[in-house]
Length: 559
Image 1 (cartoon, rainbow, N blue to C red):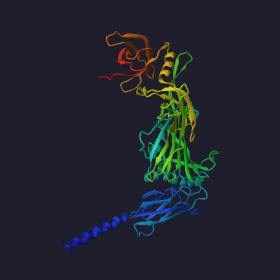
Image 2: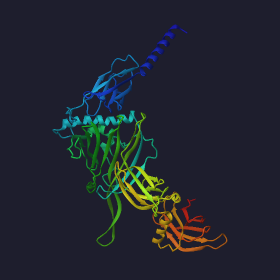
Image 3: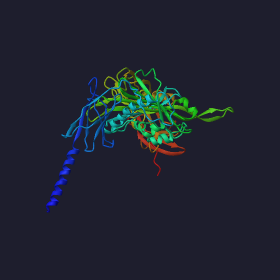
Image 4: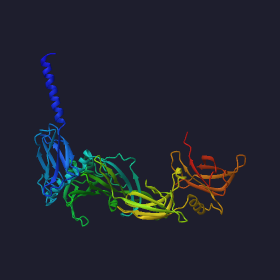
């Protein structure tokens, strides 16, 4: 092999080794407050190249420590933290695989530090403009920290979604539905459905009507240059409910008719030096919808390990439901009944790779279930209607249900024998859960047989001495309840005897349920026949093996 080729190969290999060594270098350090010398968590640290472009970025932890891979083209370190003066530092000489650079940050005497910037031609000149844009720089640091945390310190999150139907335009919750994540693999809480460019250009709703779809901003949208160019900033009017907070209001610079924009504020805690909340209202909605106060809210929480996260969010929209009123002539006229609806979520639990686990201060309910004779209803199951929450009573009849989103709940009883038809019995027990509270509630437990007796008495289907029950549900082939299905019953003592049709029949309601009460010996055969629209959809023979026969009358699928 020629010596020149060997030398070139050796030089190439040496360069590759040096490059690999350079790539293996890292930059570490601790960020401290200039006065207290205490560590500062949640600091954004960014390595930039000679042109100012970001190479990589990270976040200081709860001990103020940070660490970044140090590439050969890195030249400076930019440091940002809400409530502190930003810093731009030259990197020290790289003589070891690990380069250390400790950082001292100076806390700002006030969050409102006026800055000189070029004016936005679409925004009117205001006396507080310089101060507002100075506060915006602090808000930007807080928003950026949430994005960097999502990138560099993702958590395994368990979120709970809710849908609250309000009473008309009030804040009183009429009903609430709750849905938990199907898995705990989520790594983000709330994210916007569209980029800032589209939201600023086309608006934050598909139309201004109640039937439109509304969108909310996230940290990425608020930081985007299109949002900054499309909105004007000013100091928000102080609120008595926020004594330690200062607000930065944002309003559309060029609102156009027919487009839904947002008008809101970012609230910063001046004592904790943290971004607390973003609240906004939709502008440009129909005049009749304004009284329902459509808007939204995003709440931020700084975790003990220095990671800021969105822990609560919702969008309040105007929804419509078909209704009818009596017109002047006495006839019914259709109309849209409007009401406010809040759709959002809670971050219930989060766990990071450093071992930190965090749980939200949600509500807990303790329910004491007892039988009619006062004995504990051990092993009984209760569930909260329209939610995934449930619990099983211990030997003392106590049931504990946690992670409750604030709002009203109704309790129902679950009998494992009827769980297969997807039903539970409602109870009179209702309660309202609040954050960080644990009320103790009493529930008188009725057996399924006792509940069915009450239903049969109410429907005039019960006679003295009846002690056997048929309880079922008519369902479509895909499991949905069937309304207005006609259910008939026949019995016989054995295979070679004639069927005796009962004069009792049942027409199902929207839940598809039916029941039959009687006094039949065990071993009796029962024929259940279901017709819908004159057509037979289910017919099957069952043998009574206990005092309760549960029937899942599922419609045959179409051929």
